[in-house]
Structures are given as C-alpha cells and as structure tokens.
Length: 126
View 1: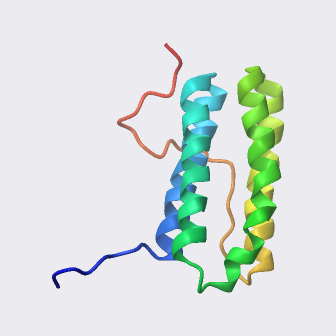
View 2: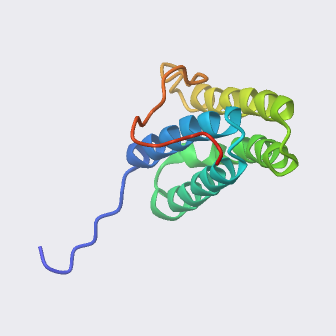
C-alpha cells in the first residue's frame, strides 16, 4: 500500500526493551559504562515510542513505574559503581515485573540475564 505507515505494536516495543535490558546487564557487569549508558538511553527512547504509538493500550498508564528504576541504574552508571549498578538493576528488573503484574501480564517474568543476548557484540570495556 502506497502511503501506509507501519507502527510497531506494544509487544514489539517490549521485545526491544527486553533486549536493551539484557545488554545493560552485560555492559554494566563488565564495567563498560559507555555502552550501559547508551542502552539506558535506548530504553528511554523506546518508552517514548510506546507513549506515542500505543496510546490505545491501557497498559501504558503504568509505564511511570519504570522511570525511578531507570534513573537509579543511570545514576549507578554515571558513578561507575558496580555494586550500585547491580542493586539498581535488580530494582529495574523488579519494576518490569511489577508493571507486568499490574497489567495482567504476570506470566511474562523478566529476570537478570544468564546468557548474553547477542554473541556478536563485545561487552567488555576497552
């Protein structure tokens, strides 16, 4: 169709957030603070897309639950503090799950990654 515009659905946005969540973890535990910071920005950008393109979804009313956790992760990254990073990442992960519970998606449980999401990316800091 000429002139048609495709906008991702909420599920596509959430898959992107899930990938960035995992990449933040591996960047952070490897103290690649620049990459971790970049990935936090990617989540924030994706959330803006959700707010813009998924206005018909009642689930987006709970999105603010994630911002304090993202700020906590971001502050730990800026401080280059591994212990704070790990604690704030747990908060972020729990916030994702709280949002899922509040929107009747409790079956979608997010966890701290145990396998790198992309084997073609280096997570160690240079």
